[in-house]
Image 1 (cartoon, rainbow, N blue to C red):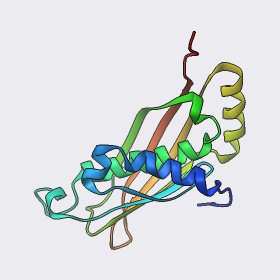
Image 2 (cartoon, rainbow, N blue to C red; image 1 turned 60 degrees about the vertical axis):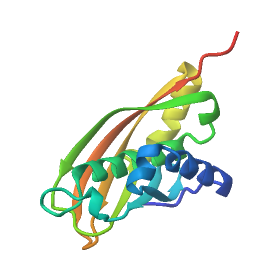
Image 3 (cartoon, helix red, strand yellow; image 1 turned 180 degrees about the vertical axis):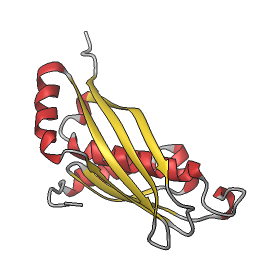
Length: 161
């Protein structure tokens, strides 16, 4: 994953706070650990209340982590536009590839980092834009346990009259 494009510290902190303030993320312990322009990393702890009938980390925790880290990557790509816009996830395609054992980590990156500039132009012209974000979730053993593709949409807030 290329992590060359960084955000100013205040913007990265704002993105992290917004995602940490979502009650469900807080409930399962999802944390965004780093965020830049179109990429992010995160983690979630292995805790007994969130294990499944097999004793491994429940798919719901993996899903929440993937959604949150993809949202952070999306927000990082549109940090300058977020004050006047609403980000929405349209779809999260998930593929669980292994049982999850131990603490989870996740990495998300815009599927086409070069397309971020085009998405900015689309938002400036039409007040809406879309971006696809790829996510990989790994467990405490370092193996991939979930792969996801998040489809995000940004629309301008209606202007007050």
